[in-house]
View 1 (cartoon, rainbow, N blue to C red):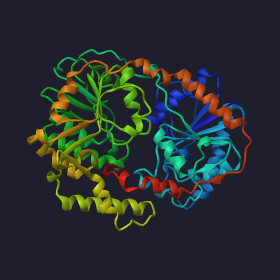
View 2: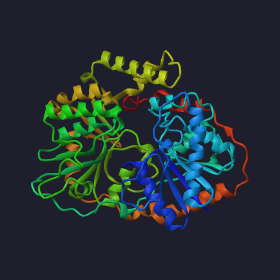
View 3: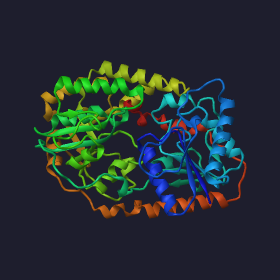
View 4: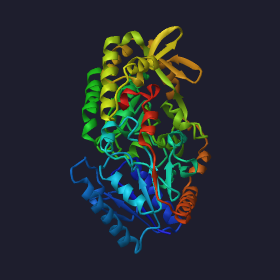
Length: 489
């Protein structure tokens, strides 16, 4: 058994971390493998990498048909060079995410050659990535279905969506990520000099769905002396303007927030600016993200021994048995703080852009239906969930929230309280929230066994010519009014 793992790049980030752990698991299982990437690897793990430049991000071009054939040949050549044979299975990460316009024809070529395939979906172009989906619009054959093809998904929510869209249940495997403590920073805590209060770290890149406005709002409501830090700025120029807007807001409002700290500033005197040092000196981790694939931050808080606070994502955390700290479902602000005309204008424009990008006609009643789903009631009064507002409106609310903190409400399960009280209580807790033994299910050993079982299944089944899922059935599930989110539009 030999495996070719394929991804667009190996830059620092979520899928690269998955590939690092995946390679360690396959090595432990004695499975020969190669990672085929569009970019070189700059990390420290001993990865067996072959660079195939055609895998890197690519917009649609007139020569896509020819270039996809060249890419497939280049991949096969690189895999044979590394493995000394044709791979028994191809394991492709995020093949339908729309980051490279060659991928639909690449997957078609592999599927029609009856090659055993694992299509590993961490994220969906259909979910809040209309610019990505545009690269897929011309591809009618996007999701192949055959006995020798498996869809591996990282949460039950994604599996339920694929099955609802028509993927047979036996072809769709729940495949959670692993946690390898050896790849994490030290979990010990040594307070940095000059750091008096809580140090709250958001260990992510500041892209839109990480909901930086809510991160700033919580920081503004925290007790004096607390510091909130975000690890890294976005790499994608598409998100830079939004990120820079929050940099300006933090400065204008003099919030206790430090953005893009890793590699640029230390947590305190005597410390370095490395990610490891920031994690070591953090008293708490935070998440305000509105959407995740696997939700690694939730589990890593246990592995690092750091209490976690922030926004719950029930569609993700429902797969975990562990408890993580203080997680709320909604962060409410009075609807009166938002100009209704502006909100409806933002909503109409966002929906129109999104539907146009997805190549769909926007139903006339849709804006009103979505606005109804945005409405929240608490204590008989009208509220809005701050996390599902466009950045422009979030920034406009922040000064009012600073002046009237008692009017901002946290909903945590069936309990509600002023957000300022909630954040103070959360920061008063400095002990790890759960038992790290809950991570056993995500061990490298279990991860290796899941890979062996999956590869054996696809490699030994009787192959058949593929049929294709109607891609619009899946898109329609994501375009339902209740799934709309400004930060993913």
